[in-house]
Length: 254
Length: 303
Image 1 (tube, one colour):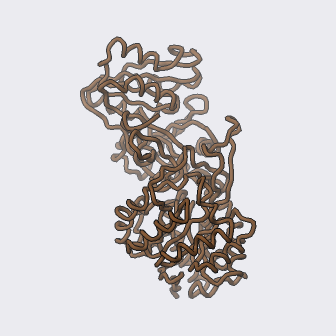
Image 2 (cartoon, each protein chain N blue to C red):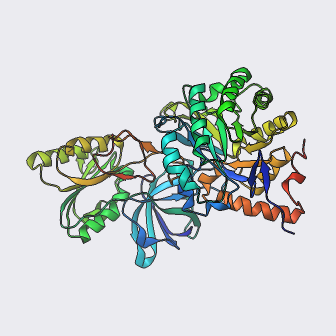
Image 3 (cartoon, each protein chain N blue to C red):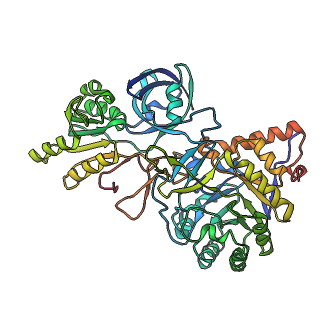
């Protein structure tokens, strides 16, 4: 389907926010799902780019995506002007399941943060008390700290220490869990594999629900090519595009 | 005047010459969410082996200019589940089902081909002797005419369906391999599988794909495929399924002029999930406009 770029801005170094509008099944979107976007003029780029949905606003027929420029495809996307039309497929994949009246932890790292935004919004609406830990490599990469603060208590970490606490989000989470292992009923995370693995180790033996969102290079995006699989605790591997990108914490080997 | 889109391929009656290529279409379920698979000429399902296979470590796909590399490694649920879950589901569509079969040994190929033929749920076998992404079997059966002849002789004994052999471009002389397949009783040939390639991440200073190399597909390989179809069409009498970078109806016409009787569309499905039905519709328009009554009229006209 075709959507039109209605707004775009650079949030931080190399990180772009884009709002799109047009004919899209907005009301079907689950937090954590993605859209598969065609890039280029259809000759050089044969693969679409999977970009997570950051926010959906059905009343205003608006979808917000946030992406980092990592190669030619995302560079092309960032260069598109307001008014340009994008060819997208979506929403794709399985998203986060939002819960009611619980105590939840959201953990985001870098460009893994945007797919947690719609989730944070819904958790707040559903009466959850939400703690939000956001980690970035550098201070100049920080974005959306204030936006997340509307939905919960935000703790900021940067590896270079330029903003927030210096270090990794997991050190803060670990300290809180040592104080009270029953602090959170649900834990949701998206970010670098190392961060996700560290969070998984911290909560593995605790009775928490929630989910972890994974990323991988994809081709078809719809489950046909088996390009983006991940290892699971069962014998079978799973496809991140259709079985994920959000998995149960105990389902995947990180 | 409406052209006749029907094609007879190795005994299969196809309503049109366009089918998705193995490995690019799963077992059809995902694309059935986009359109009615009965529109296709046929379906070629994912390579099936005797046991389930997880495939290679990730990353196992990456884009390159004009194409992509994959090193999936024949991930599939194994022949038992293909027969139990996938092939019965495909019977609802009014199209021939072609099962791509891969193996590590002659025995494995024979076992899988036998099971598929006995199931009564398939219309043809496409024998995969050209996968570049596995340690054993795969490509090793497709590079030596003598080894291929031995495999086909064994498979022919158990194969009761039309037998199509999918050839690799990663050989010195594809004509020699094609002739060996024809001599050993193949009913048809499909070509080309992917070309071995590599991409290096210059920041990490390592290959992008976890396995290092992968198979190159997409528009970048079309001229290689056209040339190989052209060479093989001059040398064999059995029909050819042309594969390699097909994106448009004009690409189909080009393969037919090079000698292909029908075609498989692979990577284009990833760019556009509607690629196959759009190509079929455009092909009909193209033929009408040029007054081509059927594809036999132009098959091999460039030879």
